[in-house]
Length: 160
Image (cartoon, rainbow, N blue to C red; front, side, top):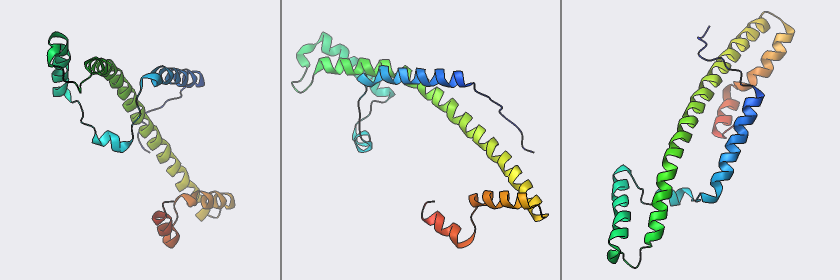
């Protein structure tokens, strides 16, 4: 028997509260979010940790030395974008932490449920081999998850 690493029973009320709060957060953020395609995301120059100090200094210099602001630069927008970036970074960090916790728990609970299901499937197959008609029906139904031979290869090729 496998080691049970997690045992959770999340009450429906908690799930409802979490879903409501996530929706509230999404509703609060939507007016301030930008949308981009994957190609656009890949093509944009990104602000890394080293760039943060550089951009911060530029924002400060535009305030103290505005005579050097080029005509193609919008210093007010630069400051607004930089400020929004700095506000969103810690919020994003927390959301990533939550996402990673959920991802790990989803993976662990899925693993444990699947292993337990395989134990049951193995037991049903043994009972079917021993001649239990009910077990045979269950085993045939569950065996659809594990197709064999040519059909299995065709399903893999066709993405099924």
